Length: 400
Ligand code: ADP
Image (cartoon, rainbow, N blue to C red; front, side):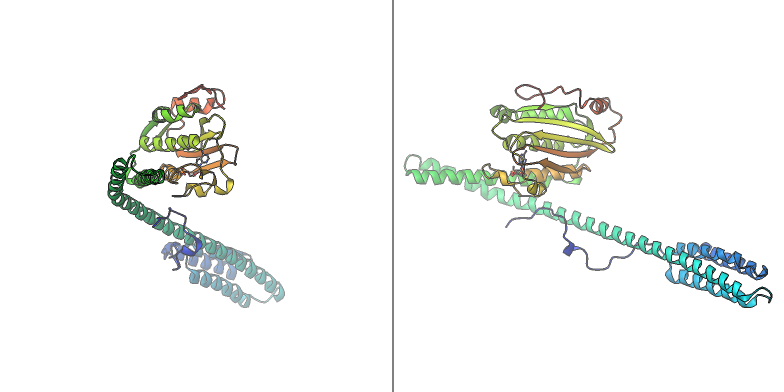
């Protein structure tokens, strides 16, 4: 059984029940009273003014007031009442001026009144639709969070349960291998070593899956993090790999952000580790930079490796998905899904810009309330271009 990654719900999964519209309906007596008062005043003015339809143009205010209640019947009722009153006065007018004048003027007033009604009605429909969509979005978010939590719980339990039998199988395979050492034919020895390496692979998948499931909002230990210090630790951990590949890692000044240092370290470790793993024939050169954005920082990890087919650019961030270029390397397809999860827990997003054979640049954002205050942040803001000094894990420190 292969668990699926946390994917966006498809259109078909949208809730089929009509969500409750969030627009509020109010019986605010003040609004009702003001609508009635406006009508009363204008009606009186219309009656008292000889041959004067002019005040009735003020009836247009009534739909604007009535819409505040959010009650459709009230809006229609008030607009209808204004129309009736406009025409009632036509018959109360004393004889004198030609009747056609009153007819024309009252028709104009009625037209303008219903025009403002239509505008108000459309606006209310648009607001209702917006509220409905917000409600659908909130429902979907809740559902997505719940299914993600379920997936994490599943991954955690499944990984724990698989661990035991896997360890036993690995131990038995080692015992068989040592007992049969030198006593079997070449094929048999090859199969045994294949079994051992597959068990090892399975073990690393289970460990990665466990690590993936451990990252959740409840365990996010947010503190001030010096990204350069985190990077130094990560590079230290990757030293053997970097040296074996003669990889060169450089970086611009990195800021201080608010986040979970352990998770940020895993994030950088996965991205830098992948940059080395998916290297091209050329010496691996990896460059990290950070740019200030309105509400945080955008980090970039650039490499000169194999590159990624643009068609794979979104897929590779899903659990167990691997790119086309990964056929010759071992892996479980969990690393980038973990990166995505970490970044999203930090209120950011992650994406890649790449083309096959042209290297890749992974970008991710981290929301940072301290971005404008810290000294190192200002240095990073100003100095991304000039201050390309570097910390290299191995080899020279010049940026690519
Ligand atoms: P894994 O490395 O175990 O396959 P990841 O989730 O870390 O899993 O990566 C998913 C896929 O993304 C990889 O299989 C690979 O095809 C692609 N990929 C990730 N990082 C890079 C990179 N820096 N350069 C080229 N391809 C990459």
